[in-house]
Every structure is written in C-alpha cells, then in structure tokens.
Length: 147
Length: 470
Image 1 (cartoon, rainbow over the protein chains, first blue to last red):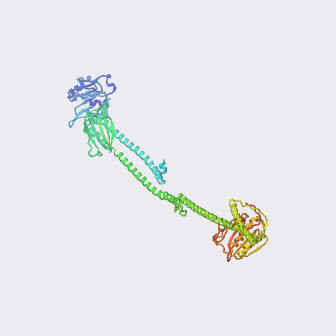
Image 2: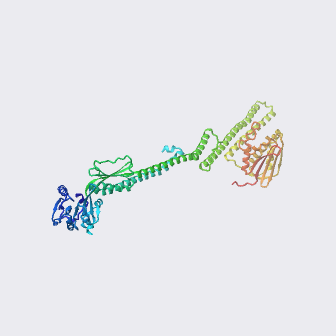
Image 3: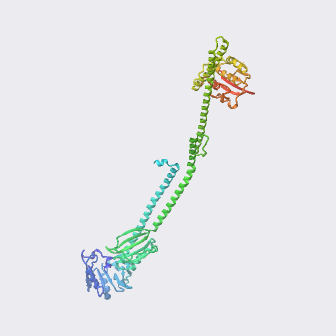
C-alpha cells in the first residue's frame, strides 16, 4: 500500500499544512486493516505521519488521502465513489470488478502473486498523478460503469 | 652527429627514408589510439545510458517485488547486440532478475549476489564493459543493476589498426630494402668504382685505368670528368717525364760538348808551351786549332745564352734594312774550310731580296741551317736558294744526306731534341730550336721536308715588311 503512494503524487492543495498527516480511510470489512495499523505506527508516507480512520459516515471521507474499500461495500460503492470522485483521493479495493466500477486501484491475486489493476480514466479525473512506471506494472481497465 | 657524418651515403639515404616513412606511421598510431579511445568511450557511454534507462524502469519492478515484470523490463535489452547480460539485484544485494544475451561468453558466471551495492560505476575489463547502476525512485534505493556489454567492436577496431600498421611497417621495411638495393646499384656502387680507381691511382700511379660507369646521371658525369682528369694528368705526367728526360740528356750532352773543346785547348796549350821557338809553322797550326776550339766554345755558350733568353722571353730583334742574298753568300763563304773537310759542295742561287730584319739573328739562322746541312749532308752537294715570293722572302737549304724520319720532322725544332744519337754527331741539339724561335720572332715560318731522293729540305719564309706585333 505504501509503495503505491510512492508512485502517485497528490496535488499541493490536498494537505492542510506542511506537517498535516497522511490520512487513510477504511470503509467496510477488510483484512488489511491490521496491517495498515501496524504500518501507521512504523512508517511515514510522503514524509508525513499516517492516520488511520475507520469510515462509517461518508462525511468522514472528507480529508482522507487514501480510502481502502472493503468487499462488503459493494452495494454502496457508487455512493462512496461519488463522494471521492473528482477529488484527489486514492481509492483502493481488493474486490474483483471494482476497478471497472470506478475504484482507482484494485488488487487481485494472480498465481499466488498480488497484482493490481488501474482505472486510468478515473485516475485522470481524480487529479492524482500516477507514475508511468506504476501504470507499466498494473493492468489498465476501461471504466464501463461510467458510460 | 659525428656518427651521422661518418655514416655511408647509403646508410644516410636509408635512414632518411625510414624517418620519412615512420613519421606518417607515428601519426597513424596517434590517430589510432585516439580513435580506439573514442570507441571505448562510446561503448562505455552507451552501456551507461542503457543501464540508466533500464534502472529507471526497473525501479517499480523492484518496488513491487515483481521479478517477472523485471525480467520483461530487462528483455528489452535484447534489441541491443552488444549487451551480454543485465542483472537486477534487490536492496539487499541478492539477484532478483537476470537477462542473458547471445553475446555472453561461455563460462561467464553471473554473481548471485553483490555484497556491497556499489554506486554508479563503469569500467572496461578486457573485452567487456561492466556498468553498475543504482535503482532508485523517489529517494529510495530499491536495488542495483549490473550490465555487461561487449567491447568487441573496440577490439575489432584495434585489431584492424594493428593489422594495418603491421602491413604498413612491412611495406616500409620492404620499400627500404628495395631502395637500399637500388641505391647500391645506382649510387653507391658507381661511387665506389670511382673511389677504387682513385685509390689504385694513388697506390700504383697508373694513369691508364679508367672508370667504367658511363651513365648519363651525375655520377656518370663525375666518372667522365674523372676519366678526363686522368687522361689529362697522365698526359701531363708523360710530358713532364719526357721534359725531364730531355733536360737530363741535354745536360749530359752539354757537359760533353763543353768538355771536348776544353780538353783540346788544354792539350794544345801544353803542346804549344813545350814547343821550341823555332817551330813557327807548327805553332801557327796549333794556334789555328786553338782559335777553332774557342769559336766552338763561343758558339756553345752563345747557344745556351740564346736558349735562356728565349725561355725568359727576352729575345729582342734589332731590325735594319738589308738584302738577304749577300748575307747568305757570306755565311756560305765562312764554311769553306768545313766544306773542304766534309767533301760537300754548296750551290748558292740568290736574287736580291730586301726586308727589315735583324742581320745578326738572320746570320745565325743561315749558319745553323748550312752547318746542319754539312753535318748531316754525308758529303753530298748542298743547294741554298734565296728568292722573293711576293711579300715573302724564301730561303731553302737542301742536302742529300741521311734525311729525317717523317715522325721527327716537327720534333727536331723542339728544345734539346735531335733526330739522331748524340754519339755520332756533336752539338747540343739547340740549333734548330733557336733557329725556329728567331724565325718566328720575325713573324716567319720554318719547316722541314724530306727531299725527293735523299736528304732534307729546310724552308724558311720571312715577311719582308715589318708588321706591327698584335
């Protein structure tokens, strides 16, 4: 997770101040939450401390830089994406088909390896800058849901 | 520098030739070294550039620990022939992904790990260029890329240069050898031939040898000049020897000639001194003999003086108007007693011929010619003719004696020269020489011809007018 952030740039206005924390929101049930918490204690992202937020109200998405979307959010996915879309928020999920629906990065397993797919159109709209190197590694998916 | 001066012409020429040929060779070598360096630099540059690009694109592969993607990245290098191998090592120095190209030498071992990840580095080791490049992104070192590429193009170029230079060197050496042979044939050998002749000349004084080389070149000209010099020197040496021999002979003759009347005089003086006073007739004969011997001495000494005058160029004429005919008759008359002794008769045919001459000198001329005619006349009749031929006076003296060999006709007028041996005929051999000098001083000529049957004819021709000397 942290590695993605290295290959993605947030616009300058995404942070309130120079030492404002990097806020990671978690929506729904997800297996990565404990990992995220451990990481938040040890590491920094973009030179900032990491703050983990469990989102229960969509209002809480405000101020998040990265949002991890669990698989049980499926019914409410469009609402979540509507709240994050067009804002510099990196949405990450690990549910098949989520990328097509508008999640920027969707992780999947391929022969015991974790790989990812990128919704490039959504990424462009978000205002985040994806490194070409990252795109080289990920699978680009078309955003059918928006059509 | 003394060594250079001492060296033979051939060595010098070859040395110059070699220097001339080695100069471009040196320039070629310098250019070759520069070119090889440039190629080497280019190979290093290209390898470094490739390593940089691959390292850049491999960062994400290392970051996401995706060896498949990394190998795919490395495989892009297959398009570049010179790349032998490319290896990605992770942050801990362990091998992460490997690409091996077709150019990788058999037996080359790719290290499974690198202990201390080196910084950016490029070095040429033999045929191989080795480049290390850190793989970084966003300030994080993800790993290290190692790239091996072949320096074969450089080696090939070096080989090409070495072959080229070897070929040029061989050509230069061969050229020098050929030039050496040509030089030997064209220059050294002919010069040596001239030198050998000169040495033989110095050692053996043989002026008859000649240099054989006769080419139209400078050495040929030298040889010709040398030969001409030899001929001239030889001729002069012969002449000098001849002159010395003639002088030596003359000295012998002169001494002998002077001694004879002196001996006679001494004997006569002793005889006369012991003669009783009453023997006046005998005394008279003795005194006449003394007189004749004194005259003979006078003549000899006079001739010697004349020769020295002529040699010194001080023969001066005291000209006056005179008739040649009575002068000739007077001289012949003076020889009456000698004619009686020899048995010859003289027929004088004269016509009045006047001219401006030195009477004493002309007297000498006629006296010499008549004296010779009597001396070599073998007692036969002698004709003396004086006649005018236009502006010329001609005096002809003909005897019927032993004559002169055709080969000697000119020689007899030389100094100290006689056609016949001194032991049969007295005299120092100066008479005809002095005669000729006097005649020529008058602007005339004298020549000797064989007479039709026997004896000789001497013909003197004198211009009658005084002509101003040019």
